[in-house]
Length: 424
Ligand SMILES: Cc1ncc(COP(=O)(O)O)c(C=O)c1O
Image 1 (tube, rainbow, N blue to C red):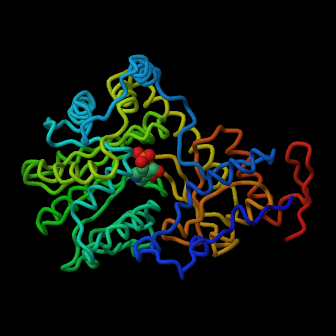
Image 2 (cartoon, rainbow, N blue to C red; image 1 turned 60 degrees about the vertical axis):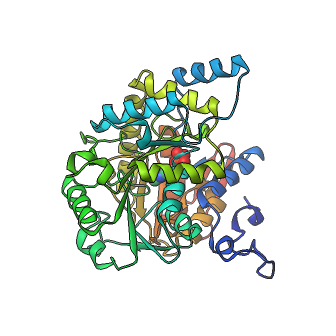
Image 3 (cartoon, protein in one colour; image 1 turned 90 degrees about the vertical axis):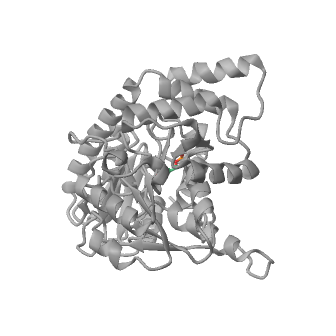
């Protein structure tokens, strides 16, 4: 098998001719690697290549019926118009209800904004609070978009890797990186890419710390209800001493991951009213409000039968167990045990320290898509998604093992195709 290197190895920066008059910010921002990998998988699949996509960050289940019927009802009216920039009244009510149900906190319409994806909620929140040169701290490994979003605001991303070699952020590491420029801290639990769920002690400490230091705390809760091993979602408001109006906590959520609705592009933020007003002003000039059809779908999902979220969490827990069994039996690979979300983050540095090189090698040799740890701020690792079927997971890891482990047999069949290993 020979890969069209054009498709996958176009470097992020080589796309951009530096002599063109592009903005500094535009040039500083990297391509979304995960979206690029999805595109690559689609191109290869269209060519009939037997690709296994362990890079994907979206559940494979269908969107809930409640979402589809609600969206169809709006479409059937033919009345598809602009909405208020911060969301339709029904969407805002659904977010208020969601916050009451899952965070045990009553908020008001002025405390919430609906956006075109959690990504946009995060982006407008950052635009609302950051000045050029402000610093934003987030634990590493981190979600690929945090540094780029911060850069888009002209501000400075400050990733912090726990010094004890675990993926559990520690206050001492974070505090060491706080300066007079620190404007915000972003935390994401369960975490993308590690699946780590942060402890109650850490959440309590960081909330107290941010309150004391007057720093914004952005809680990216997009995977909040996708938990395993008996873990229960935490509500940051349980640890907040003052009121939401006096607080600088911003909670981000969305329908993409919980309800398998990535393509609907609806997310939201909950925060103090002053901040939501500024975020609304910004969003109003960017995209106006999110689509009325898609907001109706999100309202349908949030107000509809919730068993789909529990059954997704159960499927993911089972898939994760299978992937961990396989990775634990893979000599030379050190996986981290996830307690939520849908990724295993594993140390492959025994085989190859350059994770991008390794990911391209695996795509080239065995047509398995993985995401290089480098993209999440930690080289030597690969992020493997558990969103696929058990068959895809077992075959994907089997192919990777075959490509890397000298003890595996010299030949591998992928369908009718016989591969012979000539590189070990
Ligand atoms: C940690 C994290 N936050 C936010 C998002 C964005 O979600 P949405 O699809 O709602 O924009 C993602 C998507 O991959 C994510 O992993």
